[in-house]
Amino acid sequence: MDDKVSVRFWLVGVLVFLAVTTITSTVTQGDVTLGIVDHQAAGTAARVDEIQAQWRDGGVRNLAIAAFVADLAWIWIYALGGYLAGKGFATKRTGLLRGTGLVICVAAIVFGITDYIETILQFIQMLRDAGSDWMAGVAAFMQPIKIVAFIVVFLGVILSLIIDRFRPRTAS
Image (cartoon, rainbow, N blue to C red; front, top):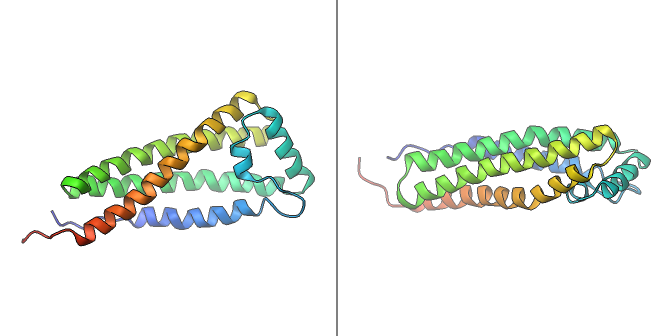
């Protein structure tokens, strides 16, 4: 039962997250004060249109599109990495670590679904160059759910690694 649990793919997801965060931060520059997070939380077509107009006028529309594309790629990497790490703890460990592994798996699935829904709806509005009340509303609704799921995966993997490191080993 002491097989090594690999978290490498999850760690790649964390590193890609840092890269995507850097890309998304380039959207707010010069006179552009509204960023990707504002777009996620917009909630209405009017607010989406206001944000996208600022991006157009500020010359960062293409950067925003690139940020959405990068986000779509990253979601898969992080969700799958989190799921695989959780599965490793759930199948290779017992007790508390098995339980945390299952929680990580569920949170990774929830994260993937909610973040894809949010980002795809944002991306559609971006490509249409027009907000949609229902798309903006659903995207804004998904935002806090995906954030909580992201945090559960992130902290769950770290907590599981710490617990695993200091757990008593059984004799082979």
